[in-house]
Length: 166
Image (tube, rainbow, N blue to C red; front, top):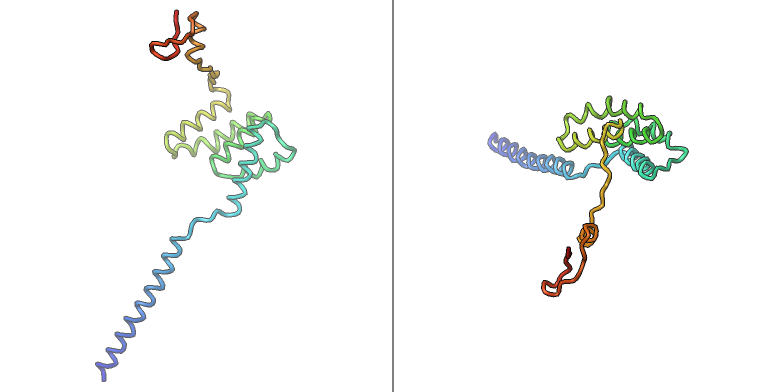
């Protein structure tokens, strides 16, 4: 009789172990497969960043930009804070823009990769007026270079292409 009870207990435990193991495995697997869903606050901050950055790029600010700027300034995201700094600079508060960079962006970029560090250091130089921005020079076409150097741009039928004759 003891052998039968012992056998029943072992079999029932094994069958339940398989059941409970599959339940736990299913729960763990489904939680790992669920994609990350940004919170409402993160989504709102992204929208604010985009909204203010578009104003920065166009140079046209709406009356309510200060309201949104105050909310975006609460973010800890370096990209959001960069936008805040540029908006402050655009609207005549260069001192506040430099302060945001010195106290909230530059300390955090030290843990970023070297490319990101260089990018934000360059932005800081531009905001603070330390950057030497080179004017864009137009690249001349071969024909323009030829004519500018005093040559004559003409067709060479032997080589079947345009050449510069000096």
